[in-house]
Every structure is written in C-alpha cells, then in structure tokens.
Length: 428
Image 1 (tube, rainbow, N blue to C red):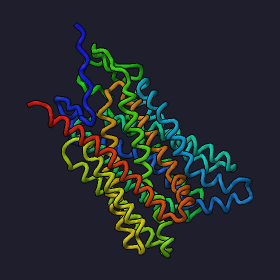
Image 2 (image 1 turned 180 degrees about the vertical axis):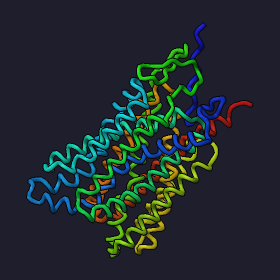
Image 3 (image 1 turned 60 degrees about the horizontal axis):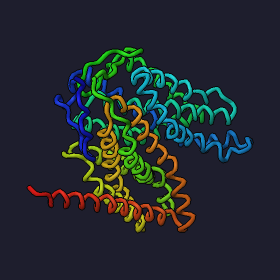
Image 4 (image 1 turned 180 degrees about the horizontal axis):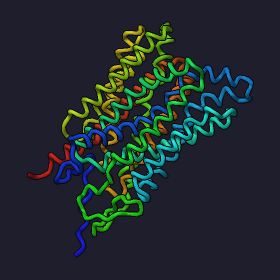
C-alpha cells in the first residue's frame, strides 16, 4: 500500500529525523568531510575578494583599452552576477545529475577559469573568464550547501550552516590580505591562487560520501553512483510558494550583510580616516563580529524564524549608529552591532529555507536561495550608490537601509504576534 504524504511542516518548523544526523559527527572522516564542505563554501568568497587589491594595477595596465574604466571593476563583480543568475539552474542539475559529481567537476573548472587571466591578454577575454568563474562558483556553492543538508539534520545541520557563515566571513578578510600580498608581485599573481581548487577536488572525490535521502527510505544508485530516493510515497510538488518569501527576504538580507564589508572604508574616509592600517583593523573587527554572531546562532536553541524580527532590528540599530557616527570609534561600534546581526541573519535564512526542502528538491531549492543571496550581493553597491546620489551622503544611505531593516523587522514581528495570539485563543 502506498504510504501517505506527510503533512507539510509549519512555517519555520525544522523536521527532526529519528537519528538527528544522517552521518556520524565525530572521527577523522567526519572532520575531513566538514573541512571539504567549508572549503567548497569559501571558494566563491575567494572569487569575490581576491583580486580587489590589484584592481588599480589592472586599471593602469589596461589604461589604453577602450572601456577599461567599466571593464576592470566588472572583473571583480561579474562572478557574483553570474553566480546569482545561474545558481537556480545549477540547483536543477544538482537534483538530476548528483551533488558529488557536479561538485568535483565544478571545482576543477574553477581552477581552469580562475587561472585563465594569467595568460589572457585581452581585457574582454579576462572579463569573460571571470564570468565562467561565476558559473563554476554557482555549482560549487549550491552543491556544498546542498550536501550539508543531505549529510546532517536538525541542530547538527544548523551548527554547520552557522559554521559556513563563520568560514565565509573569516576567509573574506584572509583572502583580501592574501590578494594584497600576492599583488605586490604584479596584478596577475593573485590569479595563481585559484589553482588551489585542483588540490581540493581529489580530496572531495575521496572524502565525501555518496549522499542519501535524510528520511532513511530505501535507496538505489543513479547513473553516477549517487543515491536516489526510492520511497513509494508520492512526491510533493516543489514548494515554490514556501520558498518565494524566504528568497525575497534573502535578497534584502544580502544587501544588509554586504553593506559593512563593501562600504566601511568609504565611510571611514568620509570621517577623515585614510590610514590603511586603521581601515584594515576596523574591517577585521567587523568581520570578527559576524563570526561571533554565527557562533551565537549555533548555540541558540529553537527554530530561527521567531528570532528574525530581533535579528533585523539589531542590524537596523547598527546602521542607525553608523549613520549618526561622527568619529571612527562610534562608526566601528555601529558596524559591530550590525555585523553581530548579520552573523545571525545568514544562517537563520538558510536554515529556514532548508527546512522547507526534502531530499529530491534540495538542490533546486538551495540553488534558488543561493541565487537570491548573490543577486543581493551584486546589487548592494548599486543600491547604496543610488541612495547616496539621492540623499547626498553615504552615511545617509546607510541610515535609509537601517530604516528599511526596521520596517522589515516590524513586518515580520506583527504577523508572528497575531499568529501567537490566535493560537492562545484556541480552546484548550
């Protein structure tokens, strides 16, 4: 007799399988698996910040190239745009062809496309190769996050999604420093670092097990040896409506998340701080606050949905302090408040999205969420530039984003209060 379809979980409810985790969470194999998943999650961050310090040198090298003023900055931003546009398609491929195989292939292609500017002479060809880096990043990020959802569940999964945020935040600072140091030898030198993925790909082939459906249903191998759910329960349709809201919120969340890393140096410059050592220290302190927020998320109990209004309110408070700051120390205080909030925000949004996906649709759903996040990253500087043009100063633009964050917090809080009141009014 066919099994009945289980009811859909309520909003923000995390399904808890009997085992609590699909794979063992201790031992050398587990540590290698986690390290590889975190490394895969950091590769798109490397692509986003590694060459930032050498952009002026690239600009000088291609000074005689028509359109260099627009094309050189595009070499930094186009991978994020490609990732944002293509991640949903990567998610579909993930569900159809298998997570592990696509991850390994994309990691190898990442090295090929990433190192291409070492021998390319045309600026247009370099920008095209950077777009291809974004294609590889879309597959890597989607597969890495999907595999976290495949391998773990419940609080274990929440912990590793928070760890993903921590690694991304810490690696952004590290890659910026590494890119700057390598760039002292020439603007092409940092591109050699993309070859590190050639070392990671074989380890992924060895150290990542074949993913299985977290429901514990009977499984068989598909074309590449990965598992396919063969439970006889009728398959639910893809939860587009459930994901639409969280994906829309994620676009805005990415705006909030990237404002401090992208704009901190400009805000300090507006206050008269031009010393690179001070700017670097301020950025490092803000990054540490993001890591602290992610650590806090991993230690909190309960589902993250009800906490979202408070998280957005914390981000809004940080933006308000940054807007009103008339000195560098006060600006850093505001940035720390904001980054504590964003450290909580990113794993919260991802955990909520994951809780609405079953094994068969996890790749596609993760791809949609990833696309939403990186589209938000791409438009972040554009939104702030437009707001600055309208309001006159970057600080005012940040203040406006803080106001928008407060409105989002209120919009999430009021429906939650109404639902709680309705539940309380039910007869016992």
